[in-house]
Length: 490
Image (cartoon, rainbow, N blue to C red):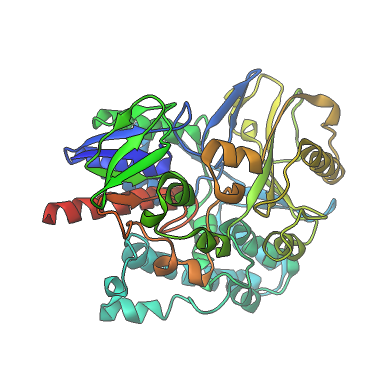
């Protein structure tokens, strides 16, 4: 079959490589000049910044992907486990480094709250059980029908996954100290929705964090993109960059042609790894859309982000590779994103400093800093607002760490909602996809198949299994294997 994939992010690359390895003629049509989707790279003035994802969690998912082709991640890039995994500022005087070692982690919890160490062990044991079940029976399914899960063993497991209880209640049942609660809830901020509206199933993210570990691929996350691109080319995938699909022409319920400014393409099968809403509501004419514009308007989106890529001409001693600044209220910041949909008054923020681990990402004696503020989608995005919030977080950074950086900046670039819209056609400027609420999980996510077009499929963060790099890898595998199974039958 002649298969065209719109978009060369993680899901598009994964799907392309699997299909090409089965002998199909696969071409990726990528809008931008490099692959990786949101995981692109900036190289300026001796600094190298990962533009998007910076957390390498769930290493088992990456290993599984490369194993599909008889490969290992180490064939392409080297991994280093970070220790500490990350650090957290709760105030100028309260600073935690989260150790990679399990015994040290348990001791840290116990030192903060009596009995919390033992409760953490039980919490993570339960999360491991959920993770194992989810990865075996739920995560790698197309989620097109309840019948996929209609086996007695799966049904029994389903009701042990805490689907119908909230993360907030689950965490609060185990821990009382506000710092421990915040530590356990922080991954939820990026999954979307408040911990009150997120199923306790997602304690699997705490397991991914504290048991599977936080890793760093040598030279940054873009190394993973380069590895996947190299593997795709090895399997015969054709990659066309700077090639934006502007229209999908449909004839006889089939995607007949893909129109681009350069040339038109005539597929047997189309997979969209681009923003689902953009494909659905802009590339397709109304009769062929899976979901209406009003459907997308009602969806709850995970945060967008305001990012600053900053190079400074000094080294810092108070931070780690990943540093979280939680000196303000997590609840208030979450409410500003999901309830009030406005800029937060006292924003939490995150700092990635790859130069703390990898000296090649900054000139000698310099530091590579990426600041991120989670934001609600569809906010007004102006240079004045960006600069206002940059000044807010820099002042907070300097107060909390006791280190000045304001006058040491030699490179700075911002990136936010308008950029997500322009570069990725991201609906409302979303950065992470749909929030993982109960009614936007599995069967209730946008489907991987188009119900009006027999040869059009969707993959990526707006369909199953959800947002994040590992889920996007899984999404690409899901749609590729579904297509292979379906067309083999035909």
